[in-house]
Image (tube, rainbow, N blue to C red; front, side, top):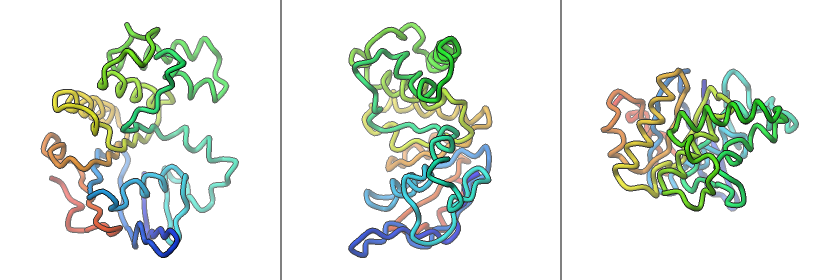
Length: 224
């Protein structure tokens, strides 16, 4: 599902964010990506989303060779990947339902279908009763659940989350992680970038990829 082969990424003036990274996340896996701040986690995520191109190496996402992906086809490619951000990236001039339905609106989906799919997504994350609310009145955990609903609205095969619980307390972090795990139980491939190693202990048997100064430590690519 996600394969990196000898992938390096260099930024000027000579900073190597990733160096010869190799790994393969199979379809349906639940995987953690850990490492210190600046280890290369965000760069790796941006490469998966075709927001960056590798300096060297090959990347394959869902059977697509990324070096063959044209700029014109990038938006359609990204619709197959759900993304959960640490800071939610919600629009406060729109309601909860409008935020969740925005990816469908951009895709030109009929309004009736948008309403149906938005309500189903909000019901899945337990926020159907707040569909008309403005995101500003929600708690931090509720905002993150809105972000998750938006990420799954296109029924993606891959869900990536960049520090999804970084701004939440322990109880809410556990709820968000359980929600992500639930999607994985429905055969969605999940990759979570985090610096919180306690989350790994919540999900024994999950895959663990460890980045350190742009290097992937093969001895950490194992079950925990």
